Length: 486
Image (cartoon, rainbow, N blue to C red; front, side, top):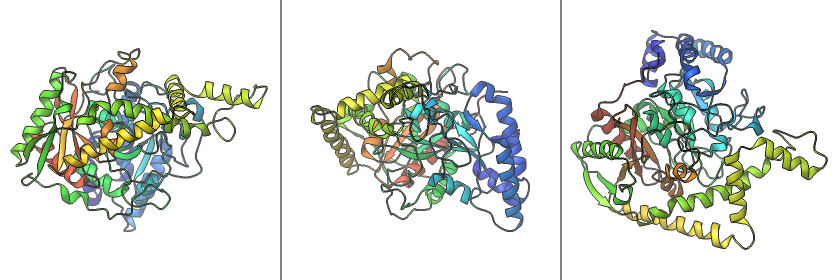
């Protein structure tokens, strides 16, 4: 099973040299899944037969002289991305048996480059959550410590990479859903600029916030995945027609000439001391690499959670109205009327957190309340973005914690919704502003739980993030560390 622990770049090298085949690599990953999945619960759907057939196909293509950038590499994707060969459940009973008639653009891009897609990964239902405990098909666990959360909503995507069950994964990030689980599981996770990666085929939660991004074992792999999935897509009206740079070229040693801002609002009494210690150490690493460190204020940070939990539920209320039991998804066949069928189908199909957010969003959009809630939240969102615009006049990137604490026990915060919502307090602002942000492993807590460092930059400046993350990775001494599962 040793090949299952390879990075993408290491596997590419072995495949190109002929020292490894796609079938052999896929078999190694599948053996790893068989060995640890009962403990990790990363997958909702696993298609080993199709994966092996696809691996044999790309081995043959390689023999004939063709090899894409991901040729023969086993990857998995969050179960919020449409796949025409596998069901797409969004972690919800309402879509338990739904198989889309088309692939998401990012799925097509992966396969066009020769990737072997193994399966679909566990997540909070419709991406609504911070721990993946809202998944209708089982809760993914943190590979580093049994019984601890993997984060959310892309918990399965993060735990899968950390447990060596896939070489890389895709997740989605609406308020921190890539970065937070990446931090808690000790992997690299990037939320690209809104519009950099196509959202076509991403099942919508909050359309103005959602973005697809990679979770990988190291920064070089993140750059490779970004090279594959980025780019303009005419099928997505929010996609930006802008040239995609070579992200791999950004991985340069040294930060001389770059200024790193540290927001004072992100370091307060609510921050776990171990998280602050690790992140401050990561900032020192950037300084050692030549960066100038300055403090900055993002004064509207305190309003981010309130703004997010008005805008996101409002957009979710609209997006989830399509799940009515008529065209696809769960339908109550015993209802006596159309209205009863709607009500009973949605009541049976949606979990508690999804229902809660639909109700909040519907209320915020209702007549007489729209101006007081959704409109006001949108106005404050503009102020939050302007905070960042002013920061970019002083610096090239912002360094901060990802999550206020390391991972916690499954069920520990289930009865405290505010505590769960506040676990995303440091990541939400990047989605509201539409800027790129990522988490890079920077250290560990005293109990051995990973802690990530968050990096944020101006729109379409992913190269700066990757350069900074690569410099932290080279100095932190945690690259290559793996949880001891078996």
